[in-house]
Length: 373
Ligand code: SF4
Image 1: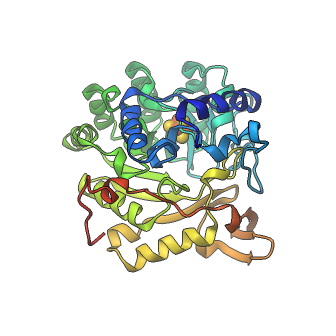
Image 2 (image 1 turned 135 degrees about the vertical axis):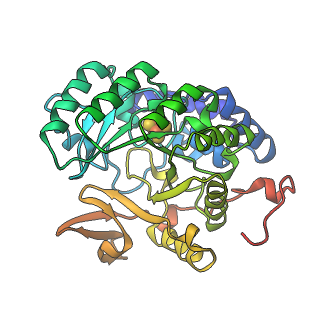
Image 3 (image 1 turned 90 degrees about the vertical axis):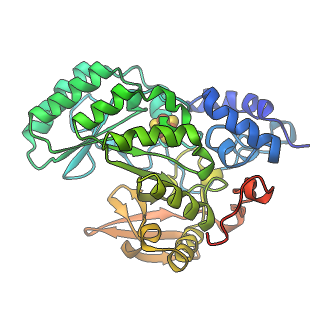
């Protein structure tokens, strides 16, 4: 008999401690949606998988089944650890010539089960914005080629407003034209996003990038909050990974992008899963991802199919046109970006399972399916 959510969470706890992963943490707002999903299709559905461990992820020690691992797993797949430009400061990450990341907090409303910074966030000994901010401003001011600062984390929505204002004022004081802020609070707890926060984004013309994964994360509360952003004339975007059992279907993605477009949110990129520890249950063979994108390409309009498929790999954002060699025998895909090669270890077909019940509300007649999607 399949284990319950509570049993799977209990099985995850020792792994979490042993491998320094983020613990399970879910807001009541999001848990309610997962509860509804579990009642309909059991544990393991798309929203469940965003925040809770699955059977395959934890294995089953009582039956001698190990947690599922895939080839090529590392702790820091995008190699952020090698890109701290200010010695001794792990809150500032620079991987590109024109922009850098500023980690403002290690906290999030809920912990994503697929978080690619799971070990970094779990091991963080506390981000002190004041110290890092002075170092950030000094560094950015000395590097005139930089034109954008991206606030990440953790979730910057959880940073107190007076601190956020200080960050924006200082960044603007050195004439950096673009500020971006990434958040997933919009689906985990929209109530944490206040009108004052939205007004601050508008005042400093901050680009807000949501990480909405699945259409069922968008309800009336989320829509109302997005509408507040729209009324304040804040530029809104979305980006997210494509993950097995969550959104690895052209129908799910097309539905998601359509809903986002209706809300005036522009979808930027879709990322392939990062190959980090315990990522196997989220990974998808690259050919399968290409098939999903090709299907969308032929069955959707440009405002859907113009979304970029990218792999965040150490030399940069790898696209299909950057593939130099694809060895189907070994499963190694060689990307080349600006003359730098990177060997991406593909996920084996035999470990991948076709998703089920990603749009379960439509299957059960609880939601009208759009026959044109
Ligand atoms: S919101 Fe982002 S940083 Fe926070 S747990 Fe999720 S993926 Fe990680």
